[in-house]
Length: 541
Image (tube, rainbow, N blue to C red; front, side, top):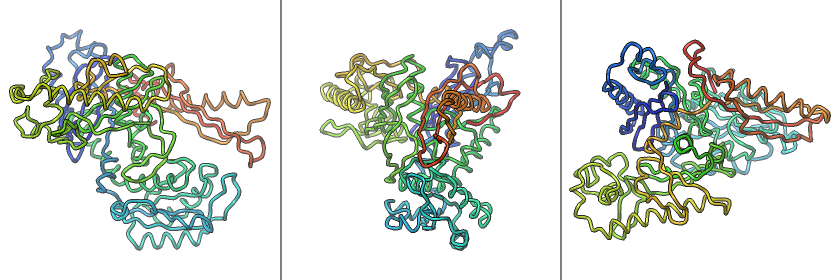
């Protein structure tokens, strides 16, 4: 059995799953400290289990098969997806003072680190940029050698300014990682205990976007440590000893130590979890997914059960980045959206204050949830409090929501071929059974907690990204070796051997290196081997 938890901006959803079956599901309000909402959700699951009929001895013994008589202590793994890190960036809060050390002189000085950051965020991280010698051209040619003395002087200034985290980036480091690693060794020796993030481990080729992503990761590392420790303590307090994982942007899991080092990898886990959950609930692996939450509707495309990745830069809180993120279009329509006099819906929302401000709960703000209740699409709060709403106005608002969501789905399509549409999330009750121009809408059971289900079914990944010597007569052998190593890493991380498959493969010749050098990147994923966890311990993605 496993628990999946998704921490959104408005609600924290949790499910207890026994295999593919949902045993219990709850929604609780998200709290600022994250862990409070998670504990409340876990207590909700526990209460549902206690309300189940007492199990017989044989049924209790068989609870691994049917969940009857199970307790939270029987859980084998807990998977959490959280928007906490991206929220911290958006709110410019809880960020560590961070230095950006770039290896690129005598080039790249025209656009220093933090050049395109919003002023508020530069101030929030006490941003300080340093330009040092080093770096390569796009074809691997040397720009300049790193200067150890220059890096030591940089470390002295970082220490003097009380900066607590460092991001190192080097020009074209995805082509050659040598200088970033050499610089990290020198800085680590001079700044013991200060975490160092390296750009080649986080972003893609583009320097400014990769550097920005690395700075963001560095600024979040203190918060990541606090969150991970808090979650571990909350689990222990509830008697849950099962291994804890966080879900990543690509739908795979990472262990706690990985989460401490790369918090930026969790940024888009919310939309990813929803899309993966939608695929599992509907049985449709290739489709458009509309996830309507409390504040926004997120629209993404699933291909083979995995979200389509964004191929260009992604702007987060006004910062351009280029790490791997799902391609998601967000519009300001959710269950908490305010309804304006001209029938406009959002983008402003009452968010987590919905239980206080919506009409159906005795509040004074007309929200999309009130419209759904007035139309008879939901039984929430007191329907008599919205019985006075004009029927024509209610239908006009619902039509407007359907048209805007249908337009967003159309914008995400890249082919004229028909694409099934699956709606999930608590706010999906706002949509009709037929979406204009898209045909029948698929709204599977348990759709309101699809995000938590997506977290619960997240898989273990194994990846290889390395330069190989590929002689013409050995190409297939080398490729097979790389694929097998990725599969082996997934299994070592905790994946069930028979379930592992290759989901991504890149083969890029490197012409500036001798010996038919080729960069090969392979990613394999597989189901978490739940039954083996109790004896094997927690693995890491």
